[in-house]
Length: 297
Image 1 (cartoon, one colour):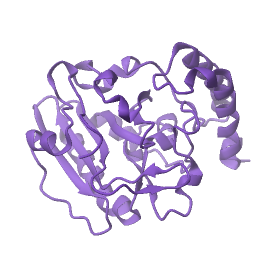
Image 2 (cartoon, one colour; image 1 turned 60 degrees about the vertical axis):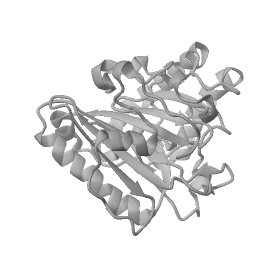
Image 3 (spheres, one colour; image 1 turned 90 degrees about the horizontal axis):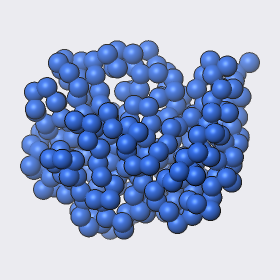
Image 4 (tube, helix red, strand yellow; image 1 turned 180 degrees about the vertical axis):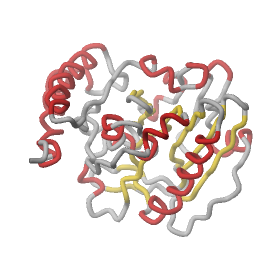
């Protein structure tokens, strides 16, 4: 018999989401930093359901660690210096979300990531080769309704739920399940997601397998031009996506910016200064001085 979360994934996610959110809805309402009370309630609910799931030899898709800022996942950032969430405009309603092998700077305004952060190694990608995609997408229960994307927002939209921290980079079942949270997704053109963006992800993995040490990967959306949204929740549709790659051992960095269209072409990678100018993100700034100004580019 299939485990319960595979047979009824929405019910399984709903049970945990309800347990977590009922306990701390008042603390989260209107707040964009996950506080201690929310963290404690969420952790307790996760522990209860994760134990049951592990007994079935599968990770619950909602078993996501949480914390205040990125301090609990600092190892995912160059020199273990996390992005300072306070340096990001409050207009974005930013919140830090840590998972096992990636982190998300999430926006309650766009209901998408602003940036995802990964530290990739040859060993991690070796383990990732053996992992199967769960295909169990779910709304992130760490975020209150009204501040997050829902499955219904994507239904019938003509857009894929496109990963930013790639599923193909996840080295174990729990990390793979975590990557299917909608807090890690953008509304993406299907052809772009499955063929063009997928090739960029694959090319980055090929590089990491040859690298001497840690390679840090930053991925995110750009919102240029007229606003497009999907669903009743009005999830923002990016005009472009970016992927910045930083090889810590060699000091090399390069970036891709790709239009969110079926006919998008992968251009030659740009250098870091061109990336900063094009996006406004100084993700490799000294002392973790990353920042984004304004609301559009």
